[in-house]
Image 1: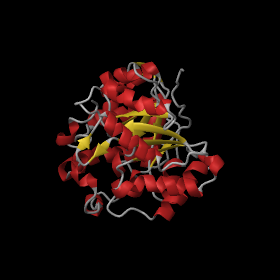
Image 2: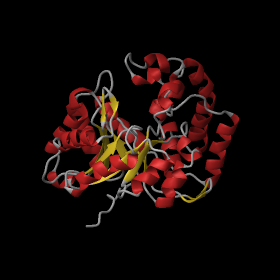
Image 3: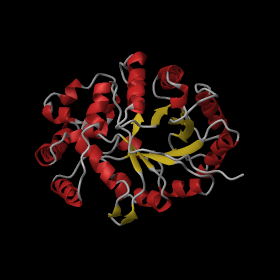
Length: 345
């Protein structure tokens, strides 16, 4: 029997991490209303939702999906695609057969057997103790038996991508991409994905809130407003010295968004990703693969703000934005020096 990748439609996906994995998550009722809004809106409704088995304590993210799907129109559920990261525990990442069985079966238990979305599983990181092709093979067995519908990859490098596609069709790959985090391009990973036309799911497209009007307009208080316990306190770009350094480029981008493109900084950031998606002859890539940014938002108002002011960027706009970074390079790892070794493996 032959198998194929799950097709990923649309311009956007939607991330749900902030709905369950933050010091004080929003109420489920509010998040469910937001999920219904973002998946049904006529103009920017998205069909791809992204979550994680470990996004919050006691399977909180999976419980949110369960309640959302149970309260949603069953016919609408069938149009959705849900990609869930797993294979991670307090002991770390585990790519063994036993771990894949536990994680996939646990995730699937929260999803209805009838009228369910397409369910994609992705191991959250590469476990260096287990050959990656073996881990993908373990996951593939659950596509074959119907427990899940497809496989995604997360935080992989070129060699892991090549190993994975030799084992089973890969539906998409989730990696960080934003104006402030362009490593996926500079490392050649985007080129590799484009050669196989595997969609890229771009998480943190607003760099965890840095690429927003609010950040620039409240730069003096932005860092102090981040709640205690928020993971951003551990990330390099949120350290005071790096934040101050990067604020120069941030203000230039803000001015370009408002003065030249008549839009918001967050819309410029998302529009840049959409412009790169599918581009011809972009930084040595003949044809860029489909890229879907997955911004999040806990309210309908935030979703509308992120999605509704997208602008069409030109090649000249791309050059002008590149010049900003040439004049004012960004400082700071995507996460921090300690975590860096677990990325792009």
